[in-house]
Amino acid sequence: GVHSGSSSGIVPDTFRIARQIVSRLENEMTGEVVPEWLYVDIPEKVKENISKAADLLGKEGLVDCFPFLDGVKPVEADSLAELALNMLWRPQLAVTGASGLPDAAAAGNVLRPSTTLALSLRLPPTLPSEAAKDKLKALLEDNPPYGAKITFDCGKSGTGWSAPPTAPWLEQAAELASQRFYGKSAMYLGEGGTIPFMAMLGDMFPEAQFLITGVLGPKSNAHGPNEFLHIDYSEKLTCCLISVLSSHCETKVELKK
Image (cartoon, rainbow, N blue to C red; front, top):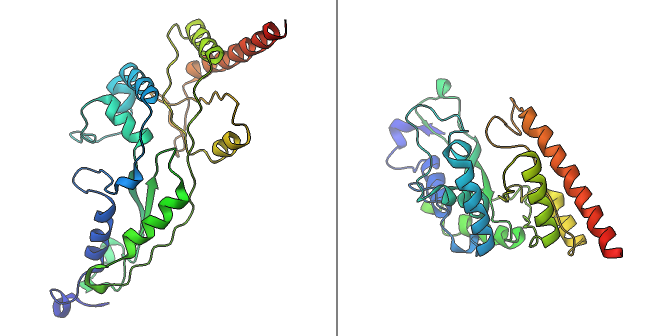
C-alpha cells in the first residue's frame, strides 16, 4: 500500500473499484440484480401459490420473524407476495466476506493494493448455473475501471430445482392432512430449491412426485448458531407426513383393484 496523503486523488482506491464492479451486478439503491439474463419467467401457478402463502403468513411470518433493529425497514415491495417472490424466484446478491481490509481499529491512512469480496448470488431455481457462471465472469472482469486487474473465481455453484406440477392425489392428500392436524388448508411456498440433491433426484426420477417440507417461519430458526424448532408445529408436521404416506398407499391399493 501507499500513504493516502501522497496518493489519494491520484491512485484509485481498490474498494471504490470493487464497489463499481459490484454495481454491475446489483443496483445498490434497490437491491435489484441488474442483468436481465439472471431472471426467469415465473409460472403463474407458482405465483398463485406463493401469493396465498404470503397472505397467510402475513407480515409476522415474512418480515417480523427477522431480528430487525428498531426503525430498520425491509426491502421495499408492493406486497408481501412480491417480497416472497424476491426470496424464492428472483436473483439476489449478498456480500458475505472480504479480505484485504484490516480491522477497523488497526486501519491506517493507507491506500491498500487490493480488495477481495466474497459474493453469494442466489439464482432462480430453473436457471442453469453453468451458463450464468460464464456470463458472470465476463460481466465482472471485462472493461475494468482504471484498467485495474479484476479476477473472478467462481467457488461452489449449483443449479436449483423446481418441483413438477402437483398430482391430484398428492394435492388431495396434503389438503386432508393439513386440515386434519392444523385445521387449515395446505399451502405451497417453494423454499429450498437449492438443496443440492433435489435437482439430482428430479433428473433421476422425472415422473416422481415430491413432498418437501420442514419447520420454518415464526418461532423457528434454521441453519444458525441459535437453531431451534417449534415443537408443537413439528409434531403436527410429522403426523401430516404419515397421513400423506397413508393416503398414497390407499391410492395405490385402489388403483390395483
